Length: 272
Image (cartoon, rainbow, N blue to C red; front, side, top):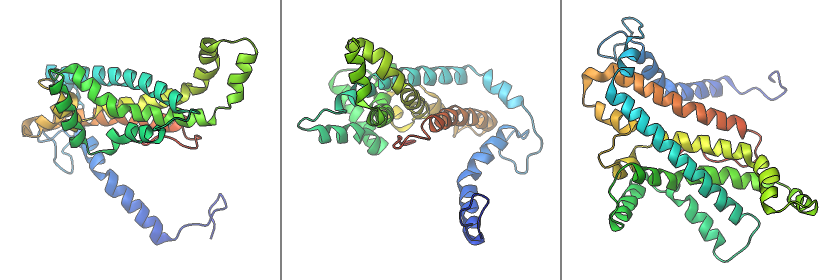
């Protein structure tokens, strides 16, 4: 039997297993979203005793929640900006040029995101102590940028490989200098790759917890705030609301990045 698009239809048992796998993966997320609207003060009654938007107003009136959201947004924005610059420069340097140690350099570039987060966190904390840097806002930004660079690098290097070098040569033949060629030829070709890499980096930084725990000092980002709330059952409804907002803030950039790179032969990974 074939489906409407002409491909062989999968057996029923295989489709049931696929839907079961999807349900297993997304059931906890569905419960968090349902409990965000649950009128029960405990925040976890099932079935819900009623639906309400009251917990949203409570959450948005909490000063500690707003401060944590603001800090996470500032950290993610700065880490993304730094990752965009470093990822673009690194991809441009490694593209087309052959030199000794290039493969090792490429491997070391992706190592921070391949290593367990606790190893990256301990390494960063040791490095900051050696430099005499106190943990705070900028140590979080630098820590996040170390693995966010990979998101940008993977997207940009893939786009570089698809970019015909004849475009650059044509620009030079027509009198364009290096800066004009970069501004009017190369960057427009890389725009969607940079945008997709930046959105992935922002989403990755916004919900990063393990590395942040080692580099934050007394700062409290939104993931750290959520972790601390686990010992306060009275705040469970507000925690559900904040968790749902985190999911939306991180899922939307990932979906947009997937949309922008869906026709790219080699796109970046989606998470750590």
